[in-house]
Length: 143
Ligand SMILES: [Zn+2]
Image (cartoon, rainbow, N blue to C red):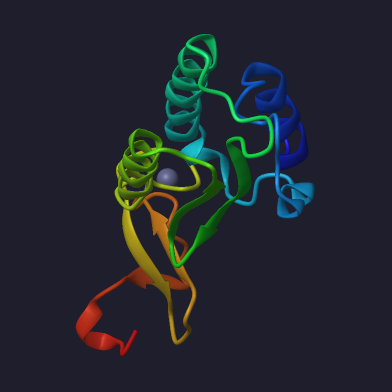
């Protein structure tokens, strides 16, 4: 399944989460599939939370929950939203932290890697780290 198909699947599966989306979601999801289980657990919680809130009458017609972008940046997940409450933000932070220890390529336990001689960061398990990636050590870099 490519990133566009993945995005369409999630839109069908989590209609309240994707009721409003920012223009960046036109690019689909911008990360590799190893993090999909983490994102699906997050979307499942948000979907149920929104459904309960809306059922209780907490629904602003002009300012609803919106997903702006789901992507990888500096080796971890970035899940950008508008209109989220504190509970949703807490779940997002937990999911983003989880991706720092999860291989973006396959979902196995992973750690931050750096492209040799470069500035790209990746979270990878030992099997998925290619020969031009090395474990990231903060003391070797000024970023
Ligand atoms: Zn891996």
